[in-house]
Length: 545
Image (cartoon, rainbow, N blue to C red; front, side, top):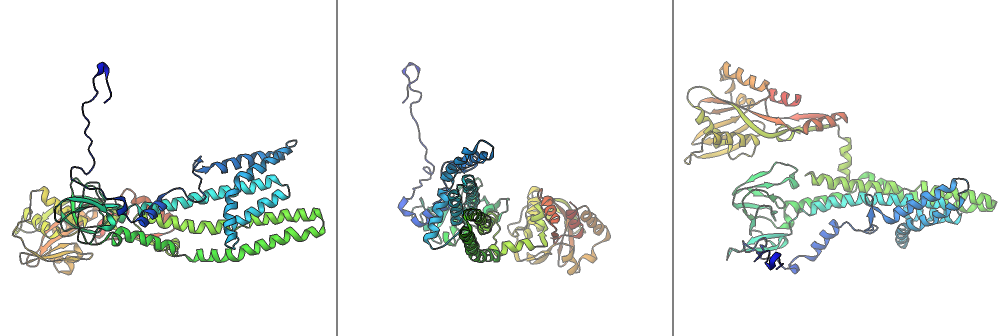
């Protein structure tokens, strides 16, 4: 090893720890991977593409574009008296700016087509033939800049799609059923029914069910919801989500990678980008007829006037070249598909799948947006503020115990709050309790049978329907109305025999970004409506915030 002062070693021994060595993980062979899948992923994420030069400066401008711009600016100085010779700098501007465009034009002509690149090349060389070097430089440089802007927009769309594709895991830690050894294999080879180890920070390779471990999973890449989700045995998990908790999960796969949620997301985005909108079809149809017409008209302007003399021919040829430049439909033909591709990929990254440009376009005509309240406009993080008993048959512990039993199977954010409140007060679910017929009543609450007794938890609407609310004494009724006016979400607990035995109130804060989102929509002339199963007081309080 290296020698320190006095000839001694700085260190005696170095231990190299390889990730996965402790668990006995075996890395897969490169040839085990599907070459076409790897190539496709590399092609989507790779930044270099046809027409993109690797040497870039100033935010991605290519060297040839910068040099073309410099010489174009120099050629424009030729309009100053006595500086006429500077117009020849336009030749250098064309030399640097036109080759990439000319290459595309050549490929287009080989396909027996005529597009914007061909039009620009004709305009540039026509201007050179007329010795209008500064005009030729303008065409070469400005179209090169437009090509750069197009490449940037296209690259953003490709990167957005690449970010979605990268959600699909490359490998999986499969547990060998015979030896219990963990083997790393390509994710695409994991069969249904495999037991997979998902360590902290690992992606879940395919849809499945947790069989061992309790942890927290980040599903934001698939659902757009930033709040992590707790996972424990028998809970379903989605491929592409990430274990961000502190413990390992063992997952039994219920689908292959190709049939997982993230793969379906990728397919939906690809299909959406292939679905052309009416605007795209109109633009393409227009360009197919418009471009030949412009070329024919410009050709006539550049040829026929020469029969009336050199001066007339030169004048009209210059005007014909100008027509080719200003009538080029490239802005229409390029902007529409690039805009749709970028929009579809960007929304998919946020957990929103728009099925094609037609649907994306129709969103521009939306005049009314409806939001759910809990977890959408609000954080979905409730706090138990009040819990009151009604009558003398039950105490606070009994109420918390019933709430914990009936709310535990539910995924609603309020249910988790009530269960946590019971835990904080040391109330646990009895091991001998029997829960059956657990049913979620949309917009009302939950009903279930606990140890043979029908129990109900829900809002005022549920208990009015059951005929229990009218029997509630005025003191408790006035109390709950006061909670609702203060912006709380009011709930009731009752049984079929005793009626309402308890009232409670939880609060839920409004998301920080909700106000800005609603204000933006309203400023755009869009009506915003909030739907909620809560009481009128809680709804109005949230709407006011």
